[in-house]
Amino acid sequence: MQRVTKLFWLLLGLAALVLGTVGIFLPLLPTVPFYLLAAFGFSKSSKKMHNWLLNHQIFGPDIRSWNENRVIRRRAKLMAVSAMALSVVVTLVIAVPLGFILVQSLFLLFVGLFIWRQKES
Image (tube, rainbow, N blue to C red; front, top):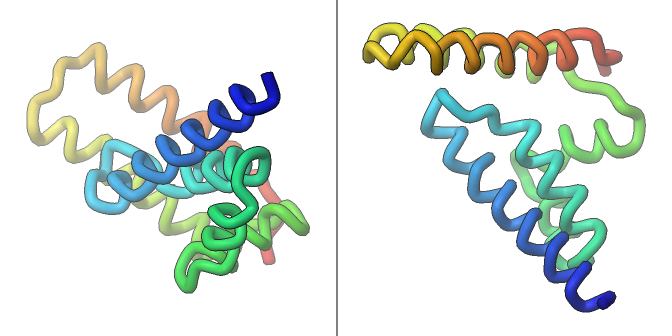
């Protein structure tokens, strides 16, 4: 049972890592929440992957700040909220169905509010 649980967390971490990486290039997906989820999944399954993500040159410092102090840099907040707003604009421009845009906007609104309300470093 422990092996199945570890495998679940590893697969969740890998899926979140892939989605977060896709989110760098595709403004429909937020990157930071997926990377935080990946770090959580790896912490439960793979010390090697967890250490790799925490020590990553680009994403590591922000993930460590969140894990250790529950803080987000103001620049990261601005980038995240800007990317979320851009994703809504992109979906409007490419004429995605209105229902999807409403669901996306509502989801991103709650994520944006959560991010903005966190302490800053």
